[in-house]
Image 1 (cartoon, helix red, strand yellow):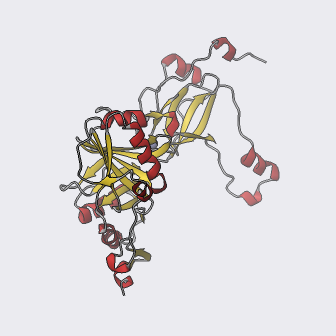
Image 2 (cartoon, helix red, strand yellow):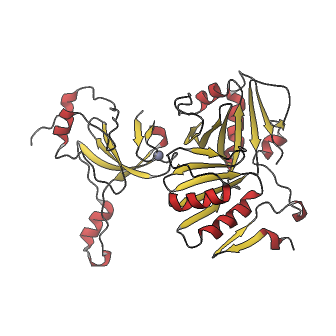
Image 3 (cartoon, rainbow over the protein chains, first blue to last red):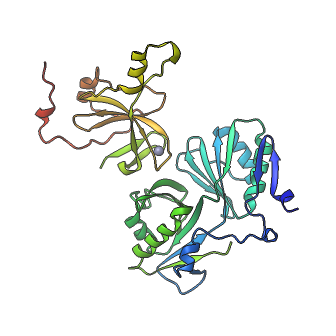
Length: 226
Length: 129
Ligand SMILES: [Zn+2]
């Protein structure tokens, strides 16, 4: 039975794998499914535009809550990166595909490649044992949009109240803020790109906003294969 | 628009990210069953509405989602300081005048911005009654 692999019990918490695999007979649909049906999203890798928006669906999103010192030890052991201690900090692993973000003084957002979050959650739970903590898999509730291109900053200036200039949002910073009258987590993982973590139910809206605001520059919305 | 200093995010943010949540420093009666209806009603429903220095709870709704406190002048809309939950204000109605002469600072030492100024400051002078 496939459930045997996709469910676990660590301590007194039941965890389950939200990526049960192809044999489970479930086709995952990204939050941008409607936009895709409407032809607003194309496959990755086409003609260069001034702004590229790439959806990264089905990533593993975990919210960690608890004391910084306890969580830092566990995250460093299991993920190889240290918890950002400073407010608004964002750290990535050497590969750049796993990140830990400060959300509030007792809350961090961990994003890992699709399918890794189940094992990671189990390992973190096993390591944290009886410590006072909470781990929640929020991958089903939010998705990640990646913005790059020379006009990406100008596009954000039209969309968020936050100061997205180099001194306001340097590499390694992430903020929760207002984006086109909705909420968004705005991240700056590297020099070339910005990331938006948006609510699943607002993903279509955000993409339509981006397409409209980016029309003057030339904007292309693509979807990375999971 | 206000620029409000979030004591958790440690920087100024647009007012749009915040939401006011009423009077700060309300203390719930330790043993609700033993207080009179009047005392319980006071705790539950009655709030101060001062003209001048007021301490309020706000929440950084779209940022860190933490509640914190603001000392605000209800007559001038000036935000005098912001401080974390569990902390006490450094500016109160009792010491506000002294503070105003010396200049105001946030609890962590950063300077706080001044809100909208009244059209006629005399409107906001306290008149002895
Ligand atoms: Zn904040």
